[in-house]
Image (cartoon, rainbow, N blue to C red; front, top):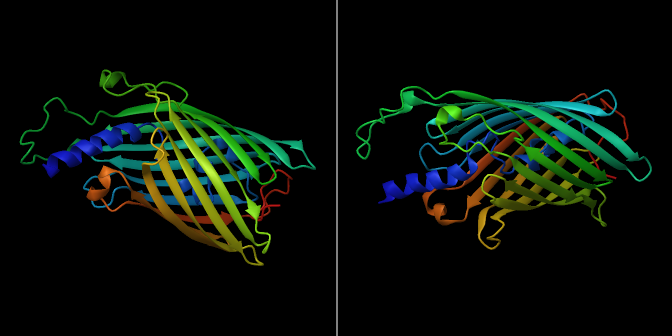
Length: 324
């Protein structure tokens, strides 16, 4: 019975969140890399920022989703930024590889009150295929499906657009991903073509009254999927402590739930990390809290990063390491 339940749960959950021309968003964006969420964050910082993520979902289950990604963004000119992300995502016998190229422009609404408005766009290319070479017969499936005779390779292009408002240490990001319908003709309607999804990301950073080098950052991340109307929300809190060289360590916790099931979280887990000079490290552990929890030991996310060329821009709309 267990051999039947596991594939069924994998099918139900991954059909909702996997293979959607979009990277699985767990807590990568909380590793001081908001560029994961929206192209509008490209070039916000005053350096070249590189972040590499390794994500292993549902540890303990064979052929569970696995993802690797690299993000890089930096400022060009005085008020614009560009970024690029590359990813490899496997889910059982299916695989996605892709790239996003992003551009953002940052406007100064008010110099003295530190209000800024940013607009961004990403061009996405995604490649999807089925690894038929990995198909093997089992006791339950003694004969392979004769209708699958090739890897069903298909390549799609799409766009993301977004807007970001910042007022001192407050930020509000609105983003729409995969605004074009997916090219899925070769699948004869098996896959959905409407893959548009929307994200709202907002947070506020404030300093401790007792110690000006301690920061707290509560944030909320909302996702809505247009294809079937489902949505989820992350509620997060982070703590940072800086030293006099602006190195810091941080810790936090994230709580994700479906919006019609607030008291039944999908994931709950801690996060820790540090930044020393130009090196960054972050780790997140997400505990699965639904009926699937008995079959796995959670999801692990590791982030390694490097920051180069500090002071690449002195424009006032550049975000400094320590918020004012």
